[in-house]
Image (tube, rainbow, N blue to C red; front, side, top):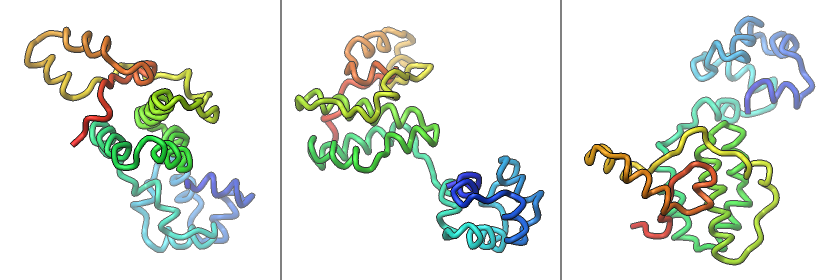
Length: 189
């Protein structure tokens, strides 16, 4: 959680947080405005802010320290999770976790839309109605088409865009709706 959200939850102003935590207002303001990375602040500063906001230091730093893997690795992880859990358990776990919404709020749009496409695809394959909770996201799409690395490599080696066109024609519709080219989610090793 970022500090501004915690301030709102605690009905607190930056001035009051600064005063109560003994963190200079300019430092706090720079953190809230993104000019200063909280992860680069002293442990004492993080401790004082966390204590005043009634959260752990880890919780306060969570967004700063979270690493985002490559999209190719992310896709592979989702496909393996589907294979390991099976369709129904995958749907249940994904919907319970609310990762689709979490990724959207982080502005991790490729991950958000890929996971939503996977949920919609697996739902269709199993004759299950779509979860209405994400209807607001279903009309969105990425500004540029994302192709698998293998297709990009094939285009580069053949010096042709023909593989991209063929991949788009063969893509699973639930993914293509979001400008993500995906044709095989079950054949993972």
